[in-house]
Length: 256
Image 1 (cartoon, rainbow, N blue to C red):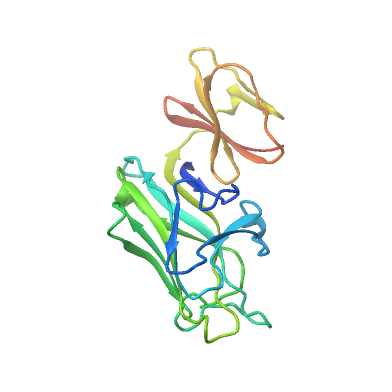
Image 2: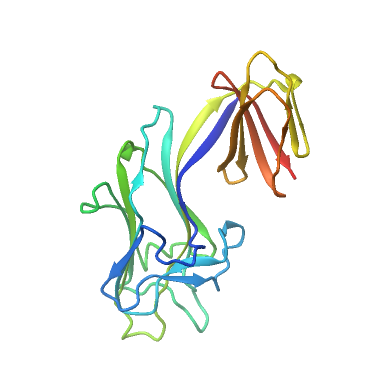
């Protein structure tokens, strides 16, 4: 059987009061650039919290850029992924803030901060193909940038402020970079017992590696043990993974 693990390298949910977040830059030609907003836009189950990064109502360019993100070397079967959640501006009704004919959003990547490659170029035609105003996630394979430092930026260009009643917006809820690993495993439930808030490994020859992941694939606990372990976890859904000499021997989902 196959098991897919995702180890976090970088994450930002814009929940800190500091904006832009530490190490990020917020530049452009507008007087008001990207803003941290307590979301009037509901991201639902995709939400990382109550705050988002949002463009403001003003003509010009706004550029939101990450700090340097150090990527590791990866194994041939691994993948480095970059993803973010976004929500389209309002479409329809009396407060329609969809992209106009000259509005553009670009998402770019660079390993030197000077030379940039487009990952996304969205305009009023491409962005709204099948638009439904629901939270969406986009994901990219950036494995070619392994073992380097990268920067990612969102460039919003608005040229319609003086010609339409309502300006275009764009909303970002969270940004993630991580390594996706695929492993094979054999289940050995006979020597591993998992009960609510307790895991017991009945093997004395050598410790096994124990890892606990949250429901969104982020590792929250890791240790080597051959003893009973008490798990102090909040209510929620978790994945418990046990390794024997780097081979997965147990993958179990628990709900507390």
